[in-house]
Amino acid sequence: MASGARSLRSVPDPGGAPPRSEDELLGAVARGDQEAFSELYDRVAGKVYGVIRRVLRDPSQSEEVAQEVLVEVWRTATRFDPDRGSAVTWIMVMAHRRAIDRVRSEQSSRDRDQRVGQREHVRPFDEVAEEVETRFEHQQVRDALDQLTDLQREAVELAYYGGHTYREVAELLDAPLGTVKTRLRDGLIRLRDAMGVHA
Amino acid sequence: MTSPDIHTLTGAYAVDALEEDERQLFELHIRECDACAQEIAEFHATAAAVGDAAHEPPPPSMKAAVLAEIDTVRQERPLPSTVTDLASRRDPWYQRLLAPAAAVLAIAVLGMTAIIANMNGRIATMETQTARVADVVAAADASIIEMPGFEGANARLVYSASRGEGIFLADGLPEAPGEKVYELWFIGEDGASPAGLFDADERGRVTHVLTGDLSQVQAIGVTVEPAGGSAQPTSDPIMVAEV
Image (cartoon, rainbow over all chains, first blue to last red; front, side, top):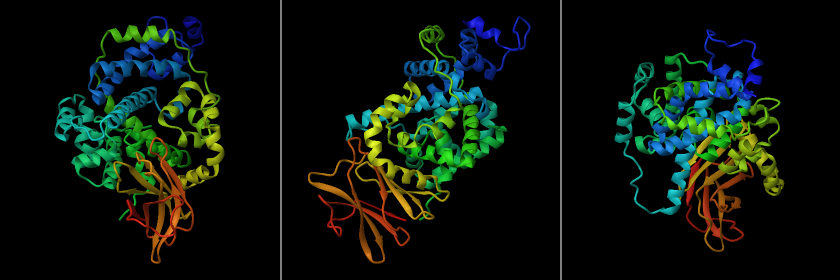
């Protein structure tokens, strides 16, 4: 089945052919090409696992969610629409959302279990911020983040990496809700421009 | 008090920082608002690049596990159009609004048949109300007014001045005690007038369209009243928001 699907490709890929882009790979995956999936896995698994791990922290939980996401990539590749963004973005949106879903569902079951319980699971802001800082390796992203105001950067980091709702971000930063909403948006606009991102 | 307009939610949406109910509402808005949809596409690409900085090799054993699993997983049928188009044209939006988070996911996972069967009863009675919810949310001037929480509940008012309509939304609200109900009030220069009764569902959620003319309303309040409601508030409000 894999070879049948591959024969549909207009560009043959014997040795020496240029490597296929992630978009092309995902297109092949949509046609049931398991070999293309294996190649796509090698390209994106580190990004997927990394962002999930950043949000969830727990390695075994992160692996579980990353595995779910990658299987979902296989299952729903047929529904990827390249007109609406790149394959990598599509996969990363899925990965982040799954990680957040896990955070929220755990929070709500914890809240049900112990509405009045201790709040030890609430991590102090300093700890989150410090961890986010120290784990940055990607220079371009660091440079772009440096262009944000403190509040913009903290809001984006706490939401995206910390997995907090903007309501929680407002509490952590002791800032009004409306301010956090607009800082998140302003921050992403600046990041977008600094990194020259196009949809 | 400023009420931030709904378009500013793009940032929070793109980094998955909205509460579930707000996320569903905002997705309704995006379908009607090309500017927001475009901005979110850009923000998603931006967030993906930021996420890339967290790159970390997964455990080596994961690849074999994933490859073994996909061998047993059937791929979804391709859609005649994009997912978004399908969502906006075929999948009645109120399913998404009413369905709990798990069901929203299940729309993608299982297809819509089961959900539709499950929701038919509720949809029949709520169709009119939810159609108005969509209209308000999609209005260009829709704004969201946060209401101070009550016993851990989140409550907010989605309000469109051009339509003169609003929706009261809450989650995590305990059911009204005993023989009581919650009652909404319009508060204006002439005092308080009743704006409808509601109770929370078993998951603590409320979606209530405010009926009547909101143009003269200065604030919205909620009190706990005896069953059947009252003509005037008989207790102190548990929540108030200025409009």
